[in-house]
Length: 162
Ligand SMILES: Nc1ncnc2c1ncn2[C@@H]1O[C@H](COP(=O)(O)OP(=O)(O)OP(=O)(O)O)[C@@H](O)[C@H]1O
Ligand SMILES: [Mg+2]
Image (cartoon, rainbow, N blue to C red; front, side):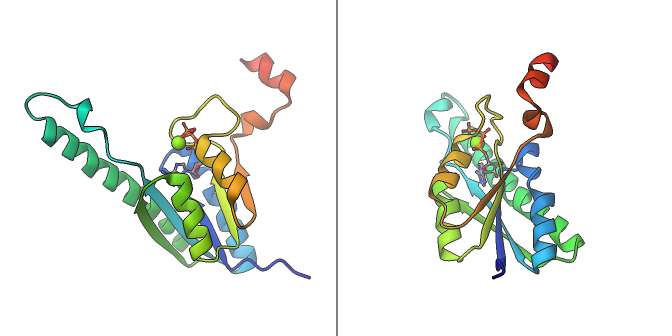
């Protein structure tokens, strides 16, 4: 029995750690004849209380606009790389909780595989970021996580390089 992979979801927050997952996703897409759905989720709006005094509203507005632009560009960058490789791809940008939106899209679009980084923008010191942890725990399909090479070194080797 063969494993059918027609649709691969690649969630990205635009960080280099998230983008590590793009090449493996494209390679699997190429091998399996799958299409790529690149998803970028805009997290909740900045707390307006972060800005006070004159220009506070404008400040918050500028941050929101930059976030939208970052999300769009992140997803579009993945699409561009897929298309360069001759793979069908489309960008999806949503707002909400990143893990929830990734899981909803996986369900709604009947995705066969999710390929994502183990870490993202924060670059947490934990083994897995919170979004990765939640997606792995609840995904309706297999999840391939991609981590930086240095973290797959044996423990003693990593300790030596610290
Ligand atoms: N806003 C987002 N939109 C789409 N995908 C995301 C988003 N945030 C994270 N991801 C996906 O989840 C992977 C892991 O990132 P995660 O956010 O879990 O780690 P982190 O940013 O290092 O830690 P944390 O967010 O828990 O502080 C990323 O490589 C990316 O694939
Ligand atoms: Mg994160």
